[in-house]
Length: 376
Image 1 (spheres, rainbow, N blue to C red):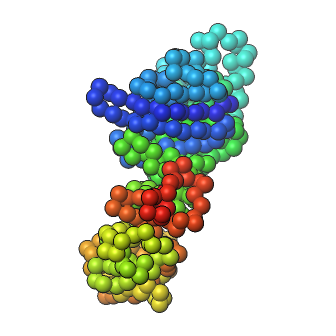
Image 2 (image 1 turned 135 degrees about the vertical axis):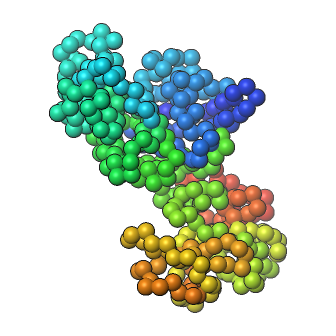
Image 3 (image 1 turned 60 degrees about the vertical axis):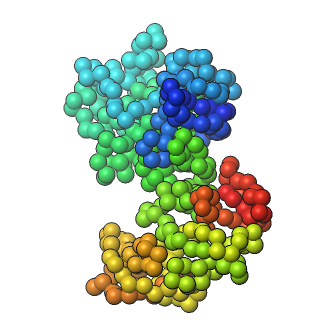
């Protein structure tokens, strides 16, 4: 197994920049997920590591060896794509062992590697079938097994579950987690699905427009998003965002004049500065006295075990809050409270504001703003 390190990696397609100065260190045996919206550069970054694309600038190292000039087959990695790319005329057994056969490995060694991979993925009973006789989940297991038999330094997965239905994706997420525990291998996984990222990752790399927005554990990204983009991307339903302005007393004011205490020191922020207040639906308290708001209920959303009320706010933005149980009928108005310790603030550039004393060791993008407050 091997660590993966990227330093100043940039990718241009003609005059179009796709990735801009990516710095990233992935530890040996770590499961890292690249996540972000379509077009953010996550698949391109994976292809650069695999050697399917060449960086325009910067270096890529695998196992301490710079691999910029090495072909994909020389990098010691294995890649599993969104499409299964199985040979339809070959059995599962032959598909699994084909790469080793091309390498000229002895038959006994190939057979042992195939049997071991099949046992790991619980597909031993499928070895004599052709791909057309397999379900989508079974085909994906075969594609993963074909990577396992090569014993690579790192596994690269490019949205491997996107072709599967919701129930099978959930099952395969569990199997990916089990596979990582069994192999202890370095795994880099690309997805646009934040649920996959939160479920599988040791650390998540959130990308937007070719840049890294934040790197951290799932809990770090959820509890301490560095930017409004990360706050809105991680979490379902997404974080509520309300336009506010700073007050002379170090609090913030909603569009209707309601003053909200956030517990964030705004000593370096001028009064009347536009900001954005963020709070997650599950952190909004029904009732309560601190930061109390009463607003009309526009909609109730029931998702089986979870229920959410959407309130109309003076600023025009809906405010979602989680309900303890499904109401028998939609209430006309609802009184809620916004706990100060659960409130986030973002400046006009989208950066999160923190107290200057806050520690941000988990964030690779932390810095001190010239006014003295913390930006992560």
